[in-house]
Image (cartoon, rainbow, N blue to C red; front, top):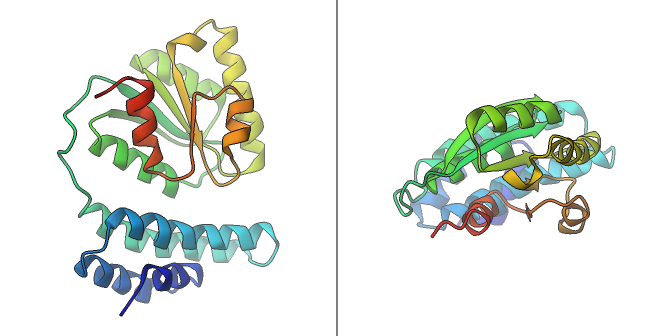
Length: 212
């Protein structure tokens, strides 16, 4: 019988069609879709990223892993529980800092939307100013930033400094996540919250924005 660990290995080895088929099988068996997503697909994707960071994988491996993950994720999203949370009036600006990687960010956006939040997705390759400008123009309550490589960490620092400079830091709750981040780092950068998994963003948003 297939296991989530088997799916992780298939994603890690970038076997797209077998990973897609196994995702269907695991869902049909009634396994927790969040576990399939986080422990299977996302962890497998992170395995490739870690190998790349250790110079044991090449850019093509990252591309193939992304293709594999994108084949599995829609199947999982289709069965995620909806309607559990009533629609809130809280608005969240979401985007990736600098990088064009968007898989994790897109998952966060999906889960926040399911959770009843209005998501303003600014996409990828954003600067600190992009987040600030969008938050101001949209009337957002929160800024959620995906940081997936080291140069973006410095830009996150710039974002916090920019909000202070513009005297709007207190207007926005700021949460951050991504492969290179940690809870300790996020706290040192004065983020209001940090998540290790995509689903953490929903709990953080509900807590920080005081949504029942």
